[in-house]
Amino acid sequence: MKKTIGFCALAFVASSACAEEAFMISSKVYDEGNLIGSPEMAVAPETEASVSQDHYTLNLALSDINDNTAKVSAKVIIDGEAFSPSFLVEFGKEATVTSEGASLSVTVQRLGS
Image (cartoon, rainbow, N blue to C red; front, side, top):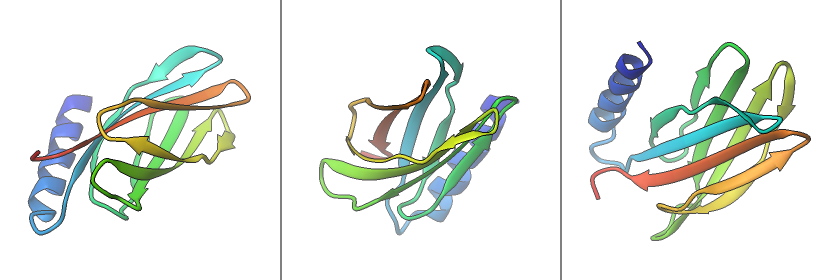
């Protein structure tokens, strides 16, 4: 089911973003060092993508995009506790932020490149 939803989201974003760039965000959500989710989302610039599972919600958006980097703005809610990091990520390289036992790792790729 998750793969079907991800594929549908990817197809929708790819088709609706023909005039715009699109990006694939691969993420990992950790709680106290334990991996609790690893969603992948296709997003257009300045558009928020969201996923919710049993114990977490993740909202992500990309902005300030240039040739090699983009700014990731996120909101991670794990069992009701939230943190909202913003950080710069280099395309194709994993970036990780941590706050009070919760961690978010993100890799961003341009679609179609």
